[in-house]
Length: 311
Image (tube, rainbow, N blue to C red; front, side):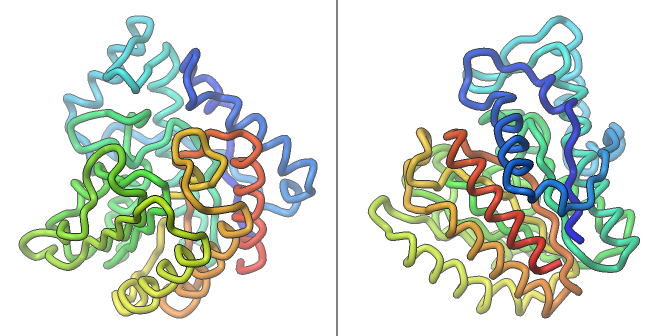
């Protein structure tokens, strides 16, 4: 059974008049309940990540800054990145939600999980919060899986419409974490060209597929499947983490790209198929972007349904 991670603490990250709002989760959960998908999952409450676990990826200076701004009543870390009084707590539970999912999967020696968390994470670098992201949930999860559970290799698959510059930065010289991103180009945050492939021992373990506006959804899915088969599966990871952004949807106000909700089911099926062959089906997805509430809800439903079908 697919594990679903959620808690109302994620609604306490109050961003005010912003596209990354609590209603993203409120509407999504309501839709999943209406469709009957909520009851089919195995619900699990997240725990808070510890500062020691955050330090697997982030500098203490960033941790201190986010906590201090929250404790002082909130503010902006950059023009796009809001902190409210309970944002630090919500961010601990967002990272901790991914860790909870990994623990559950490793205890069962297989299966998959969907983490419906916020704030998102893939733009957060080791030293800076940016792009709506405070801490890098997927990156922390990968490092935790290696340290706590002794996994040797982790693959992070990022289908958010924006390049996950933070995740890339964390693992750019690391041959034990493969980072694969498909994203609109040129686009925020300006990174993710196909010449960015890693450095040192990590050369070749960063895979960027920048995509021009005008690509069709069928072309996207075909390219995604090809990279999984030719690059990710031969890496033979012990766990796959999905940075599951849904803002490449055609109706998304920020991404405005080419995918439809059914396509996210197809992408999920491809990842689960790859995982079945290399890591006993172990897949953890963590929510990143997606800002059209109707498109987000329907896309998450297709994603969850595909995960459940392959659990």
